[in-house]
Length: 174
Image (tube, rainbow, N blue to C red; front, top):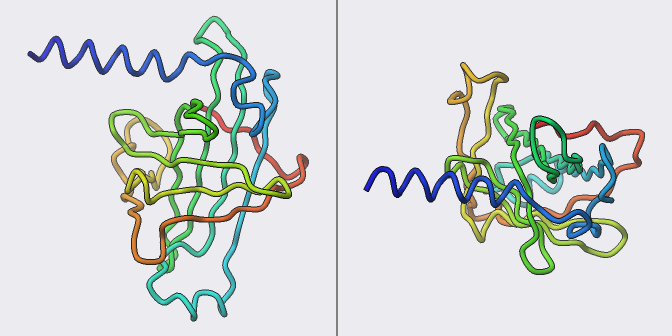
């Protein structure tokens, strides 16, 4: 039973990493290193009107990585969030097309988000459909478990992020 589970987990991971170039062009061009970024910081007035909202700022970067010696072509994401209490976390992993949306997830069932395009280059990050995403509070393999689960809550379900100019984008690395 354990071998079957390991096989299925490995097969899913390989499938999720292998994407067709161009299938997420509405988010980022299928050109090696191409990156798009979106961001939103909620002001004090918004946070006062939404006392149950925990996320005060969110940034999303999506990068296309061409096939290389270390892996297949893939879209990768970095999601950063700052919480009401000042805690900051980030999630990284592969993205793949899911209909007209993009699914970006953290491996080993660290959850994920659905992302859809909106007018003006904006995107809607949907945390509610999956329910949570694991946010690491440190960098490096030895500290990966340090972090928190960003859960869909009463006012933390969907986040409309505005597109940033390319010069303000740092590529997502995975």
